[in-house]
Amino acid sequence: MNDIIAEYQRWKQQGGDIRIKAKRAMEVRFSEILLEAVRLAEEYHADFGTALKPPPSVTSFRFKSGKAKKTGHVSKAAPPAPKPEPVKPPPSKPDPKIAAIQRRLTASRQKLDAAKSSGAPTRNLEDRIYELEDELRLATATD
Image (cartoon, rainbow, N blue to C red; front, side, top):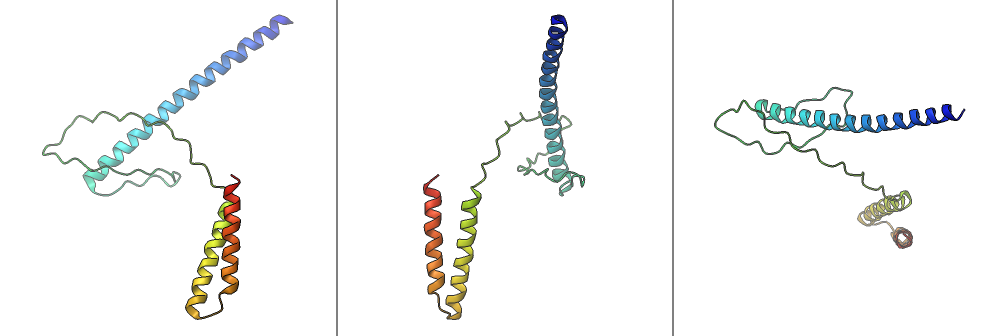
């Protein structure tokens, strides 16, 4: 019975190693293909003056084309592929409570401006803005 367990554990370890290697290989391949797509899009833009449109299933492929280097001759050799940039972690999302307070504060300020321009009483709106600012100060101070 110990032989079966030992064999299973070796098999499981070997599967984990292969999984890690496959993950790394896929990440490298994805990066290479993406860099190639960027290079083609830039070349297309330089040659034809318009941007290539990705297929409808791709919704997040965006790039900023660098300034095209204009040379007097057309080189047949492709430029060396740029090194892949390290993947940056996504920016941390703001606290939803603070974001909600900021939205209410912005809306209240707009209402105050509208009330001032129309000549309506503004005391209640000014009080509400003061309360929201205080609530925002307290919410950000505890973080």
